[in-house]
Length: 145
Image 1 (cartoon, rainbow, N blue to C red):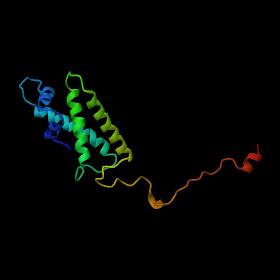
Image 2 (cartoon, rainbow, N blue to C red):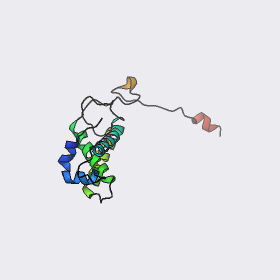
Image 3 (cartoon, rainbow, N blue to C red):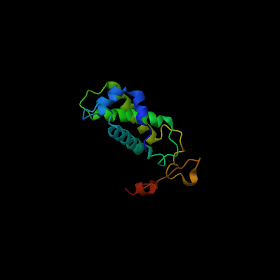
Image 4 (cartoon, rainbow, N blue to C red):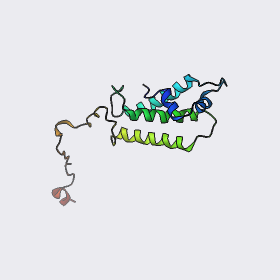
């Protein structure tokens, strides 16, 4: 599921730049199929990180996902052409990935739905659990050597 639209990308890039990034045939118009492909590819990448913490598809997508989707889709559009990618596009993509990695580890939240319970929380909710090992060598055993 995409978290942004072509209109969102046009808020980030001038129309003429979007033409340069998608018009391989030289028609002078934006190739909507390539824009959609870049958006969907970015959304799939976002979902791989989201899937670690949230049930997909989300019932409602928070605005931060739209922002991340735009940044990643623009990066994908630049990646497909033989044009020097602006440093800001690389930085925004890397920042998006770093945020998603933190999201997957549970260090940040998108506030959409509660993350799943940690594994093995069982009956120890709110309490400490301590595991002890049986000693292989105690005083009696050590005296034999």
